[in-house]
Amino acid sequence: MKQSTKLPLTSGGLSKRIIPCLDVKDGRTVKGVNFVDLRDAGDPVELAAQYAQQGADELVFLDITATHERRKTMIEMVKAVARQLNIPFTIGGGISEIADAEALLNAGADKISINSAAVRNPQLIEDLAKAFGVQFVVLAVDTKHIDGKNRVHLNGGRLMTELETEDWIKRAENLGAGEILLTSMDHDGTKQGFDCDLLDKINKMINIPIIASGGAGKIEHFTTVFQQAGVDAALAASVFHYGEILIPDLKQELKKHDIPVRL
Image (cartoon, rainbow, N blue to C red):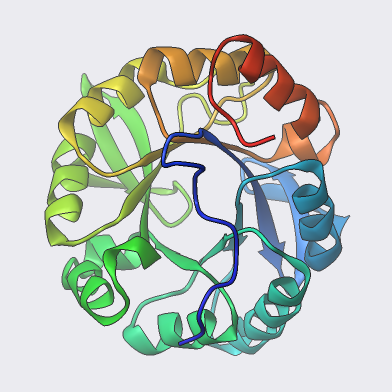
């Protein structure tokens, strides 16, 4: 496995991270609404370089239509991104066994994200953690509030499970997940802010970092999620892609509120 020469994940272990997310289909970045009406948004390698220059702390790439036939496309993209970046990046989508993760990490990815495959085979979390170290394993969880409970959803949010989100995340931590990427489906796309209550609840239950996802619409939403939920990182897509929020402006505002960030 390659030795990473990239910047540390946090400065002194305290800095809050800002993470743009790029959805990738057939090697191109796409934007959509509720996983449909996908439109081309450019070359992911170029976008990645732009975000790194703007001051993003990490990047997440999600292969939204991942299959083994497309894995070769992702490997080439990972190699190209790794040549451009000096910040860590995570790849997710279609990783269901050790070999998938090994290929992506060897190509230059810093971390891998697993979601549906981990629910179907929880042993995968432990296997990946043992093979590569817990710091490489990000568990993505898509959650929705239904009948008074938070339910884990799979397949891009289309399939509800009987798993309660809190139970699943705690189990995943025990199995060796190094980080949780928690997306609130109720808040996703609303631009009304992150689900701070749920994020705060989960954060108090576990001892590994949480990346907040779903609901970012304004700079204030980032300030609020760091102050109220104490998360380690906040992720967003469209507000960055469309230039509604610029990362340097966001970080300056966070700094004004005494939230530690890497400038």
